[in-house]
Length: 277
Length: 135
Image (tube, rainbow over all chains, first blue to last red; front, side):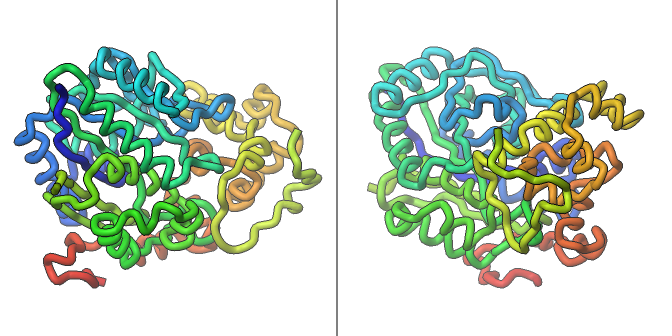
């Protein structure tokens, strides 16, 4: 039976892409951000993770508004890197675990999640922003990319993403193969890119959010997405994707790692949790 | 067709505060988003930079949409329905960075924005008794 080893949450943004591609670890502005991911890399290694179920959003890199899916899952053997304007990135090829991906799509569709199933997907910074910070290359894990629409409103609610996480957890535990799987929730934290308050960051809220998210996530399940947008800026609507990770975990969790960094445009959080029950 | 009957670019209102990109924005901005999306490709960027009037004409933009591009008013574009995830591809062709078009929306010089928002030199973790960081 597959083994659910835990969950990771991380922000994703263009800065991660820039910082990695220019290899800025030794730049004093970037060092704390790189160091923030070191414990994640170690944890993934220690836990011998085979597959990451990666919940993220596409930024008009793979999908366009002609057909913008609310939930989409990749079932491919191999994925391409998106061209976000400077050509496809020089990163290792991401491979999928086809039988597991198909199984996950099948399970989730049978359990009331009406997914768009993708045989091709170009992965952008939503996933490949944080991935190289968390993992060596060539990638030691296989990926299941899972896209959530968080850019064209209305978007899935906090509770919907939480329930998604619960179902992902059940599915993993019923999978007959002996593999180690972790779930990753991405996005947020505070940022605002549209309008006169471009660049708004609310670091105190990010910190408070990370406390609530760890100790009392249920208190936020009925929140409208707007609540997050009011507190953390319009684009912190993405935070709903963190709840897919949290919904997969036990109520009480063991915190392995926590980090918060203030970038130029984004409050950037990292969490690693294991079950504690 | 879309719900907003703008006649001229100056009709687009830009109240302060955030914009939530809705289906209505997405429908209004569909052609604008498509042209920006096309500029992800280097060969298209070369054409656009060489003669953007021709590029817009070939793309079939309406007169209103062409005016909007000519205005280079990124705030109006956002309010109209251009997605922040593609607008930068066009701004880039006009020689503008992410921070350039972002600070334009604030009505601020890019360097002013950068100076105020330079990242902290350390992480911000309660364990380190560092709740306030190095502001």
